[in-house]
Image (cartoon, rainbow over all chains, first blue to last red; front, side):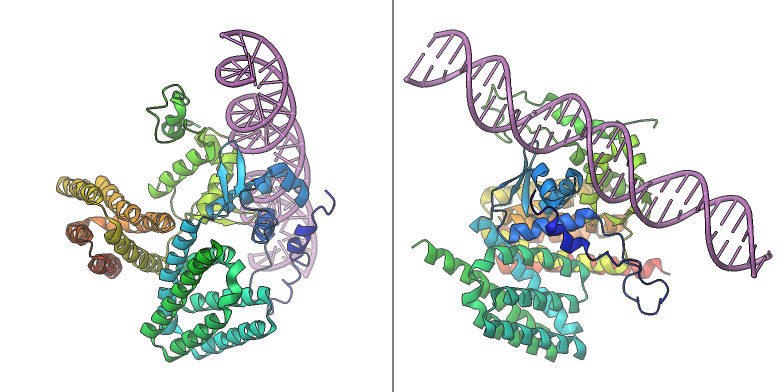
Length: 247
Length: 247
DNA sequence: TGTCCGTATACTGTATGCAATCGATTTGGC
DNA sequence: GCCAAATCGATTGCATACAGTATACGGACA
């Protein structure tokens, strides 16, 4: 309506300079020529951002036409994005009734944290087995970024750094299926967990340091244990918060 | 074209008598009044069946219009189904180029089997902790069904029984997130693995019996170990086949 | 004869239109 | 005054139409 398509402008800006290469084929080694970037992907990202932002509140009814107008596109890409959001657990799609932002329950959060714990533990083991010196160097870099954010008390950067570190560990494990799953689970966990991210930050990053050390040593067993402890600690904190809040 | 919509007839048959209840609300205790059953879901099921069947071969280009005509629907539900098939890993959706049936690589299969191993192990532990006598009874029933299929050398029933048993174990664990993930992973594993399901059947069902015993005893540790062994054994068999076949 | 370019075709991506369905409100009956 | 039934508005689900893009073919030029 007012700021129509302002949100998408950021996403669609990336293919603006597309097809720049092709002549200097030496430089563009990464990704072909930059594919057309389907609109549904941009819409997906935009909506996900709005959900994580709490701009779209849990339980809220999402009307296709409204979102379409707001994002400056037709209903079609919105529909497709909503359906993918459903399969990823972000919205509930009730037949003939529309999409509703998923409302996380305590039970579900705990289940997610449990699954995350299992997956991350395995991921850490794999990382310890596969890590090269370069990988370790990269991890330490991310660790430093996290501690900087911690010192600056920048919550957003902190959350991002945490996600990056875990993603990096998953990538080192060389198991793409696992990494993808961890990505999905972690993002949802983070959504539930962000409100209480601060109190655990200090401990959390100490545990990260320990984890990196274990990976650097190639000690899979220890890396697994550290990560398991790390994840379970997070789970515990979540429960503590629940208890505290209900008082 | 020829047998237009014959495939969907089976799926769409279920909501044929929809909205029969509402008056006798005592009987329809399960699912409200039977929701309209979106067409995209039927298309998804149909396409998945065709892919698992190998009717649609790996790498094959799926043209939306063709599938739509074949199934007797418009392109819209087909598109939506294809996109969900992508997120579930059954097809690759290349921008502006269309959908291609996913071609499984050895590497990916191994990664899937590894993740499955981790998830199933945890699932078995949870099942051992939560199982009620009724749950155990149900498992034994499924075990019997599997052994019957084994005796009859009915591969299809065997595969189904295997899936049912693992799904039942996951359900007993009372972790929906985990169960859903296992469902996804297992289905894909089965697709890769079905061609060699026979040789391992005997051992596999012996291991199942052992697993059920551990669950019945409420011995989480042992249940986890048995399931881990079971999954790793499957993984090993897959590799053996690979070696054998290359000769 | 081989390569490059232009055109043509086919398919995907997006937008719009129409019918069916759901929820809410209002009206009629008891 | 309260409950049931019918009507109305809003929204989804499906179908169709249009536009953009990639691949394939054919011809011109070196």
